Amino acid sequence: MIEKVIIMGAAGRDFHNFNVYFRDNERYDVVGFTATQIPDIHGRVYPPELCGTKYPDGIPIHPDDDLEGLIREKGVDLVVFSYSDITHNEVMHKASAVTAAGADFMIVGAPYTMIESNKPVISVCAVRTGCGKSQTSREVVRVLQDMGKRVVTVRHPMPYGDLVKQAVQRFAKYEDFDEHQCTIEEREEYEPVIDMGAVIYAGVDYGRILEAAEAEADVIVWDGGNNDTPFYKPDLNIVVFDPHRAGHEMTYHPGETNMRMCDVAIINKVDSATSEQVAEVRKNITTTNPNALIIEADSEVTADKPELISGKRVLVVEDGPTLTHGEMAYGAGVIAAERLGAAEMVDPRPYLVGTLKETFATYPDIGTLLPAMGYSAQQVRDLEATINATDCDVVISATPIDITGLLSVNKPLVRVKYGYKDNSAPTLESVVKEQFG
Image (cartoon, rainbow, N blue to C red; front, side):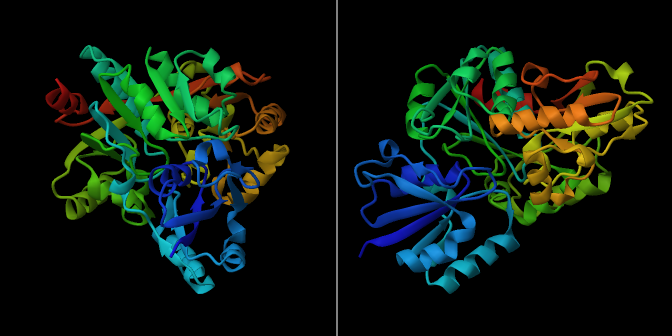
């Protein structure tokens, strides 16, 4: 009997699970995807060009809210949960809704979806969005470059445009961002890697991406998204933890899976967390994964014009996903504002324009910060208008990119960066060199 399947996702893990597990599997008939977390994803079609021979018309993508009705309408047998950074409690609410509607509920085992490479792979993942995995993966790239290795980074998918054109994306220069019509979120991940003189891939079909990356790499670095598990089978599995959210490593999916699988556990942000928070995270790691090597690290915050912040009323712009589904109440921009003596952090909510109002309605706990939303050209325009309308003296931009390359800002702007820094021995560098030297 062929089982009818719906895959729940957010334009990333769901497509990968389909490609590697369901696409050519005669046991299943995938009748739809559902989408959440990312604006304007639903209402599209996963294209036939990426579906293989079984789906000549492609596969429709529906709003997540329609799931229960779709199960009944289409006689669905199985629903596959395929997105990340969601509480265990919420996962089981989803499971209850699915089983009550008459379908089985499934989470695909992480190893089933890991593609094996013919080159060494180092994966860098996390237990929550915003732990600092990207800065950690860049530190791994730096170490490998210093060792004389040809390094290629492969980033977790963010395919928000034409999926056929985005099947395999290679970024080696800034002009590639325009060619691929990158969102702000994508640029935040790709730009710092290119600044290091490295190459980074992303897209939709991670089998084809791996083949392309292997052709020009000695070592591949998997840079994970949210708190998702690796798409490639790692030779060294590094997972980053955030003590500011101590305990979340035990209560979010699939972050706990990452904790249980990791070879190296990095407790980041030790310089700004309390000793009690760090101890709680360490205890949870040693209890669930006693074989993991634990490294403590700082998330080093620097400002390019620190003298502009002291005594000023500042608008803090932080990384978007960290504030939204990452649920962080602050980031590097807030830390810089506090350390450098800002007089006040201005609330942007009275000045929100267009789609930014929708973002704050969806994520009401963001508070007095402005997420750098830019999933579409309209969101970029609304972000620019909101910044320019806000009554403040200085803008602190703590996204990983120079937003003035995309926006025209009518106030002085201070760029705040955050980078990896070892806080204990052994160091991340020593671990990488020992295994790949």
